[in-house]
Length: 289
Image 1 (cartoon, rainbow, N blue to C red):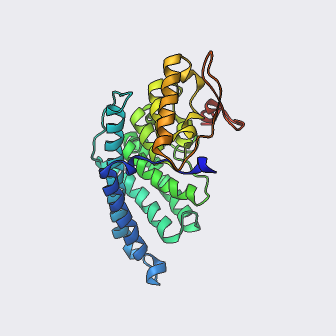
Image 2 (spheres, helix red, strand yellow):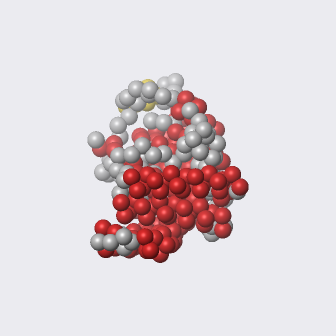
Image 3 (cartoon, rainbow, N blue to C red):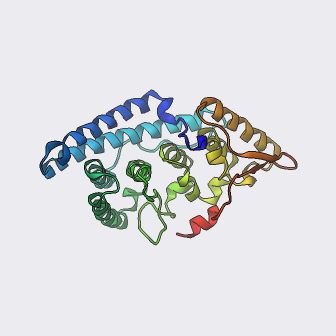
């Protein structure tokens, strides 16, 4: 069971993330205090105030993760050349995050998998689909994806089957055609913020086969990520040694976790035993969209 223990993410290493997490937690506590359950009466008049506070908290958290993720990728070996997105949401992105904050309010007030939250999810899905149709940039941004991921994470933790990225046939926003899935910074930040490694399975083939990017993934998530990295990404000696090094570094930095993949062979190329059967390959997973 140790493999399911969450790895230490950016929030454990960067003060900017810890401060933003504290701000987000304050907004969640305030939302709980204004819930119908706490007040013992219908609190619909408080939705606007609560949603506004949660939106500010989620935006602060998203921007902190983006800044910390950018520093990690560009200053820690192997350094990647990635640009830091604008650390301010444009009006259309704020509109998208407002919709997401309404979903978050319903989760806090009634529970992530409640009927009320389900209805709110369906409502905001309709609105985000319309927004994506008129302005794709409003939804296909890292800040929006990180805020949306906050709600998805709560649903998954409660036992739901929500995913951050959906098949293209299901919705117009944050689907398998999203440009974020070929963006190293977006992929790193989303995986860092996710409940597990599911976002990795939606990444483009090009990004998944990038050895330098894969090293950052393995250093972040250990065997949880390595089990999904294509063997071709570390099929040559230097890449194989690098993968072993960052894998060792992950478990040194996360002593509460233990490696769970087995090294089956080191010549002519490094081969890991998955310890499980892959019922659906990564490309087949993406093909569902």
